[in-house]
Image 1 (cartoon, rainbow, N blue to C red):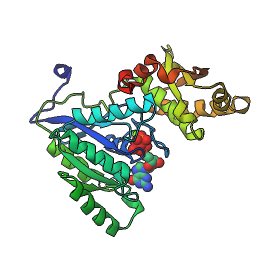
Image 2 (cartoon, rainbow, N blue to C red; image 1 turned 135 degrees about the vertical axis):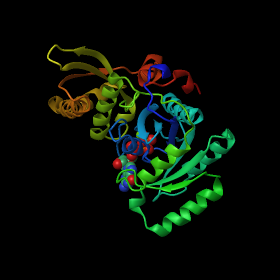
Image 3 (cartoon, helix red, strand yellow; image 1 turned 90 degrees about the vertical axis):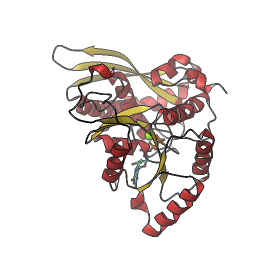
Image 4 (tube, rainbow, N blue to C red; image 1 turned 180 degrees about the vertical axis):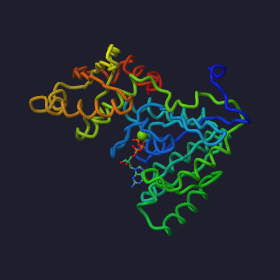
Length: 311
Ligand SMILES: Nc1nc2c(ncn2[C@@H]2O[C@H](COP(=O)(O)OP(=O)(O)OP(=O)(O)O)[C@@H](O)[C@H]2O)c(=O)[nH]1
Ligand SMILES: [Mg+2]
C-alpha cells in the first residue's frame, strides 16, 4: 500500500493515534475536528460509535491517522463486548493513545476502570490525557482534575480542549505531529477517511435513526448498504436495510404513515450528498431480524469481530 502513495519532499512522519474513553466523551467529535470533515458520526447518546473509524489529518510533514473507537464501558451483550474489544484493539495498535475524559464529569468510575486496564496493558505505548468539554467548567476544576488524573497514571502530556468549539485542538494536533515516528505517509495526501463509502453511508443513516428514536431502539438496530449503483447522470442509487430485533420496533422505525423513516431518509440523503458532492437516491427498507445481534455476518458488515463477543 505504502509504495503507491506519493510522498512529499523532505522528512516525513506518520502514525496512528487512537482515541479512547468512556462513551460520549467526545472522541468522534475530536476526530472530525482534527480531520476538518465529518468522518465519524456523533450523537448526544452513549455508545454511538461501534467500530474503529480512521480519519486522516496532515500537520506539516506529519500524516496523523486518527483512530476513533467505541466507548469503553462494562459490556453485557455480544455486540457490546465486540465494541469494547475493538476499542482496546485500536489502542494497542497505535503509536500514541489519547484518553479523553469529560471535564464536567471528571474521574468517574468508568475512567478509573480504563486507567486500571491501561496499567495492566503496560505496553509502553505513550498515553496522553485529553480533558474535553472545557467549555462546560471553570478553570479551577480543570487544574484539580488534571492533578488527580496525573497522580493516577503517568500520562506523557495533558491537554485541555473543547473538541466541539475547537479550543486547544491546534496545539494538540501540533504536538501529535511532532511526536509521531519518522516514516513515509500511509495515505494519499487528499484522503480523509479509510472506510468504504457504503459503510460511511450506513453510518450516516444510523446517526439519523439514533437521533430520532428513543430509549433502547437505537441500540437494537443496525444499518447495512445492500445496493450501490452508479448512474450515468453522475448520481448514485443507494439501497439500505435497517435491521431491527423486534416486530414492534419496525412500526416505530417506520412511524405513523411511514413518516419517521421518510424523515430519516431525507436527512441521511442530504448529508450523504454533501459528503459525496453529488446527487444520491436513497432507498431505505426496514427488516425484522430477531437474532441479528448474534449473527456473524452483521458484525462483518459493521467492521467488528464476531468472536470478540464470545463471553
Ligand atoms: N459542550 C461540549 N460538548 C461536546 C464537546 N465535544 C463533544 N461534545 C458533545 O458530546 C456528545 C458526544 O460526542 P461524541 O463525539 O459522539 O462522543 P464519543 O466519545 O464519540 O461517544 P461514543 O461514540 O458513544 O463512544 C455530543 O453531543 C457532542 O456534541 C465539547 O467540547 N463541548
Ligand atoms: Mg463516537
